[in-house]
Amino acid sequence: MKRLWILQQRAAPYLFVLPFLVLFVCFMLVPLCRSVVLSLHKTAGPGTMVFVGFDNFRFLLQDSLFWKAVSNTVTYAVCFLAIQIPASLGLALLLNSPFVRARDFFRYAFFSTHLVGNVFVAVLFMLLLAPRHGLVNRFIGSVTPLGSELNWLGKPDLALPAVILAALWLSVGYGMVYFLAALQAVDRELYEAAEVDGAGRWARFWHITLPGIRPVLVFLTLVGMIGSFQLFELPYVLFQGPGPNNSALTVVMYLFQQGFETGDLGYASAIGWMLVLMVLAVSIAQIRLTRADRDS
Image 1 (cartoon, helix red, strand yellow):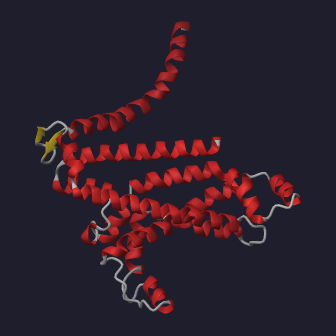
Image 2 (spheres, rainbow, N blue to C red):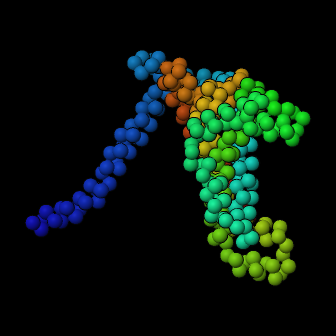
């Protein structure tokens, strides 16, 4: 009986970890290994595979559509983060003010847009951006001479701005909640000491607020960059495809087209691994820049 109890004690940790390991191996490790194997083959659906070595990667480097997707994705990521981070921080600063009433209501109102999902937002913005009758075009027509006939979903120059506008509506409140929590964690005594020393609002923001919220700022920038490189549902549903002249084509959308519409799962796997390398490179570069800035 004592031996059985000792055996149970020794085996208990492994038994608790076993369900996770089984799920991880079945749904993460095996698919990852399978995708590596597929990236070295040319396929026509799941049943036909021809070994081609690294030809998929060689063709990928010369594929103009792939680089078009990369260009669109990088442009979207830079523009999105350049607007989303300041907008979220501005809303957080506003709601952190003691003079704002009903802060809980506004906090929930701004964050609630993040709860609906990309597909719902895409359908919603199909209506909001409709020529003449869409609320966005009607507002633009009432305050500018551009009129209310802007074809957001039909002109290549307006495709990415439409996606960015929808993504901002979805995610600004999400970033605001993180920034608000970070602002409330900054020591108030630092502000009081700086005010006694004669520091103005801008000096207090630059030397106290920004260093205090830097970890959250880095986190939101990193997560936003990774999410931007994974963009798929929003433009795909909004334009019912890659948009006019592939102006809304993203890397993940191109992967989907090659894998599930064309049927070349091998080439799609190569695109997926190239995306992994791109995200990894951007993440490492951003972390190193952040560390260098912090050390300096």
